[in-house]
Length: 317
Image 1 (cartoon, helix red, strand yellow):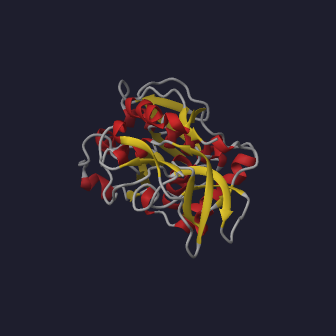
Image 2 (cartoon, rainbow, N blue to C red; image 1 turned 90 degrees about the horizontal axis):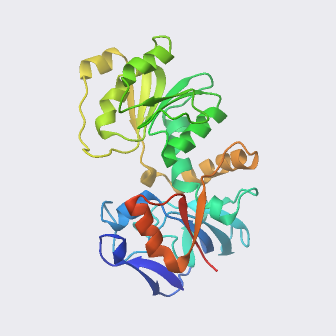
Image 3 (cartoon, rainbow, N blue to C red; image 1 turned 45 degrees about the vertical axis):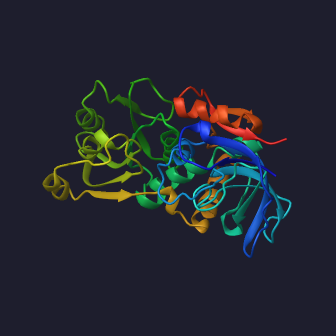
């Protein structure tokens, strides 16, 4: 089979399409013929060597859709997944076939194409875990999403609206975003002041910080008494500081979420929940740029240099 491979860490130019043996599933595993595989910014970081634990040589790619051709669960059915360890400790989905734990599989939403289903994985599963399991966001509560314009931020805003929560967005512009009550410009506005103005002086019930770094302390200051903040990444400096006395006097809670730590069961359960939202036309996938597999390296370069106008999704004939 053909597979995208990297034998050293570096820029997308280290990637090559190679012919390798088709893998065989073991107990509890399924062999999936891949129809579409998305490229996430985290895939670019993985190829660059920024993930701990990645072994070489390796096929990258975490998010995909396809058809099960061998296994005891969902055989011959269209599925999608974001398999734990894919592209890091086991070969990923940017290949004609992929091996995946059967427990991680979920049926593809009927309303989505294969390319659209391949985009759901990392952004929506991370957002769901952060809001529903970590922050335990309730109807009527207000959440501040830092980085609301990004893939996870957009997914989180949709999920929060689905759960009947109120969304305040924070981004590098104040352009309105459908689904957010207001968008606060982090370059020109006083974030804490605007948040408290928009919450009658109370602060937000929860923060999803999809930026980290210099935004971390500013986000903490936006919490109401007893509020909780979920961190999923850190842009720039990974070390942050904040006033610990103010933090504990406010009864604040800080929760970390790492999508690489999700179990196969976590992935499938959340995927099944999300499928209901997509099939009910409540949740929407981002714009897709379908890229023939033979042009995978060029697609990686667009993601790496920020020129991709839409989600890059590799397709297989």
